[in-house]
Image (cartoon, helix red, strand yellow):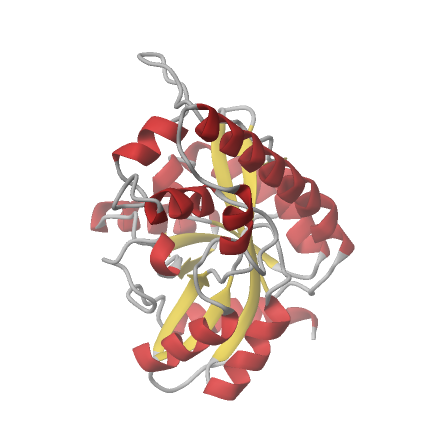
Length: 290
């Protein structure tokens, strides 16, 4: 399937169904205004926002590609791994089987983190945190930080307060006072779930977590692509990710990883263009079973 024409291709975007401040309709409208022609909705561990996104895309003239970003883990190398899935069937039991437990654990961890924050003397209300996550599948750390910012405890979501609250434990220091670990799915399990749902599994932003050592193993498990273009990737990192894609015969993707107010203002929607050539290869993979 060959795609022709102009327009930005953004293959990594979230909505309020996970940890964006914007609804699917607001995201679709912003995409149109930014010149995005093709937009993949890849909410964390949920497909609950896809139906609304598809409707919004049709209304705004933006083609929406169904997707997900699964929070996984490389237990051998002890690193987080994010697996993007493109063209997945919505509400597929394989996706739900992997992601529903993650969402439950995330929500429970956020409640424990909230309790620790309140015990430390911060005056925020759980009801307000829930309100900020309205329409989402779970409460995220971003919702807790948003509540803290509203109360004047900080003026940035990802600044010093965030680090003091949520930084994981390191060899040279203690964890943040509200850090609560979450058990994620094994990366191979996430890849298999995407494949079972008829999708194309892609390793998200490998430079961010330095996931390159696992690519050979995950390719054997069914990995089909690597996200090359991403805000966390320098030009050198893009070249490295691209070289791994060529080495293992994997397709390349890219996108802005847009989170609305919860993301970086330096990288608005459409700021990272995967390009029509990469889109064409992805759509060919998605359409192989049609």
